[in-house]
Amino acid sequence: MAAPPADAAPEPTLRVDGLKVGFGGSQTRLIAVEDISLHISPGRTLALVGESGSGKSVTSLAVIRLLAARGRIVSGRIALRDKAGAVRDLVELDEPALEAVRGNDLGMIFQEPMTSLNPVLTVGEQIAEPIRIHMGLSRRAAMQRAIEMLDRVGIPGAAERARQYPHEFSGGMRQRVTIAIALACDPVLLLADEPTTALDVTVQMQILNLLRSLQQQQGMAMLFVTHNFGVVAEIAHDVSVMYAGQIVEHGTVRQVLKTPRHPYTRGLLACVP
Ligand code: ADP
Ligand code: MG
Image (cartoon, protein in one colour):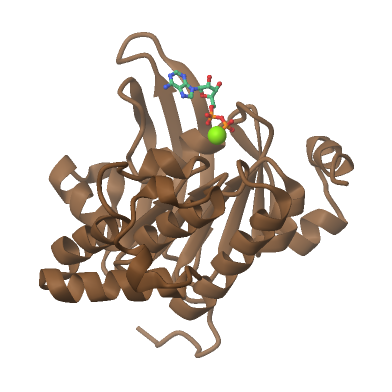
């Protein structure tokens, strides 16, 4: 087979085809999202935008196979290109294999940082533990990397801060800690579900700037969920607009902001200050 041209787009890190998710066990089936197809290449950010209840979180949790107990992938394919370059369909993997993929190749951050942090462990321990397990470093080397990560996410005095507990951090600083945890094992894909929604506006901008610069350094693909088109414009390259469980419009951020085609997108844009 001929080699692809040098300027060809890189193979996507994530490619989702025809994803359909239902709730309510095997009998009753509330279909939460369907016909979801998307792809994200290394170094690119795809925003999923839509109003509350449109299916953004279900989509993003399904992609990492972390649906709530009664949630089920009814059909679809979720192809992830891992660090070693192997492409695997996450729908096919069993729980131990998924655990390994989540630890090695995926990072995630959510709206409320406290939900991802353990209140009784120091932040240094919380960052170091997955590093130790998934990167096979000694306790000491893992803690050293944890401190470097705290420094990289902009926490001053990282070595001292590593010995503190989550409640000793402000909301914005806690979100920086969860970013350090998410990126510690150098994931190929970062999933961010409304990570700045609970923060005030100046802190929100700082976190978006941080995520942008970390993406430039680490080159991971990012799936960024938000209900806010202002945030989309700040962080994303591409955008898929969700409405009632489906993607109703997709394009580059520039295209969609400038010439939205779907009436729902126009409505959402009219709400941007
Ligand atoms: P968004 O993140 O866009 O606000 P969600 O993805 O959380 O929306 O929800 C999409 C739809 O899926 C909603 O109609 C919601 O009722 C349904 N849903 C989400 N989680 C569950 C659940 N655990 N059980 C049943 N239905 C759910
Ligand atoms: Mg949500």
